[in-house]
Length: 583
Image (tube, rainbow, N blue to C red; front, side, top):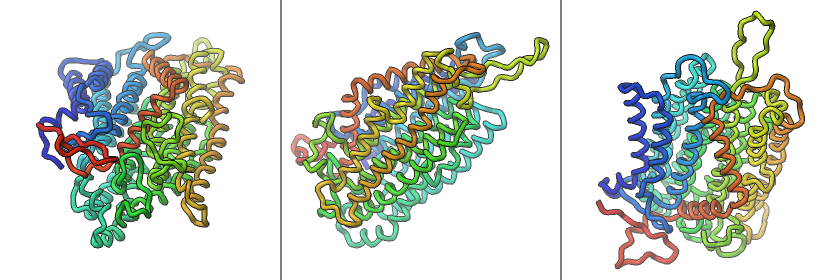
């Protein structure tokens, strides 16, 4: 790892911009009476997106201090900022003027604390994607976890909200402890906190490293995966999700469904890259390209990830079939989508150096060409995030049901949130724009063509089918396992369509009973419309996202340990140029 210098802070400019905006929100709310914290949050996100030092691009790798900026980091940064802008609008919700009538009473005073905490969460997530060191990786992951349960406690102060925040808090502590123990075991294998150094030792042929790895690798990967599974809401760390989603509001449920999942996938792909040696894909095992320790690392990774993928998607979809509460149903759906994402992770760990029986040509191939496991995972993560933000933005906009009056002289009954499937009955007649938007998002999550969710599921299934495509299918081979995994994915997509279509049917084929007030705020409705535009653009023009995901997937497997590239020493064939920045 190169020493920290001014160039390190320049590379971390977007993250530092988010932290600076968080400080403005905190201090402005505490000392200057600022009440529009979410406006500051949106301004900070825009400023971070406009930061000029976003990395070298063109497949190069810029390293300085503990940071490693490549196409993978840039893809995740962009996804985080786009998703953060949408989630900030959903989080602001009824802090702005309601869509029907102004909110009675004084405006809430906690918006600056919430907005500042949310900006710190985005900064931590972006640091996770750029981390080239175990310490920064763990610090960034904690900067995601801690603001998350703080937001759960701040946004909803009733008994159910506090219960949800406490459940997430205690389980997050367990997950962080597991992850930290896994990092300690990984440090014991590599003898360094640098991901470069650990990867180099794993891929070396040293007998001592192989002996140590044989004992510590299952422990390390098992604990690391346990910590990541909590963020993904994957089996066996999935059980908290329905209760926490039901206890919190739509805005926090949207956050839990997206940003922790992004963090989990980013960490898994970064850790898998320790055992790889190629720049355009993962090197096939058994070809002498990696050492025995790296081969064991990748073998154990794909076996565990494939098993968890099949179990997680099945458990999530079966649980969702019997749910009547909207947020519990979407929590179970989120569990299932974690299983879909793990299919791509398993395929990435087991991938061949060829795709579909031909040499993989990298990001310059036609966009219709099959993506590798890492690229397919990132593509699906982007489509899932856009649709999920849109769904919860729509639910937040709908707000509450119309009250039931018992008599003319009775006091106004308390407001009841839109919380059950029956509350959506007849929505197409009372709120046609919201009904149409929710239908598009739900159908995309179900994988109905030509929506982007279909292309995402197709790319995941193809990445699984391409493992050992040119090898003979013998009993017990990896090819049989991944064919079975692709079949399980398709079957689960069919199961998921049942409960997604049930929601669409409620909106279009049932009559309204009480209706909704649409009092959740203009900001939440705007987030829903922006997500609809994003899903529409990915539907009609998926090629740019395919290309970006392909570049990012190729970059995450690039070796960063081959030394600096200078004018006198041109890059080796097949390697990504590495650009160490001077102070």
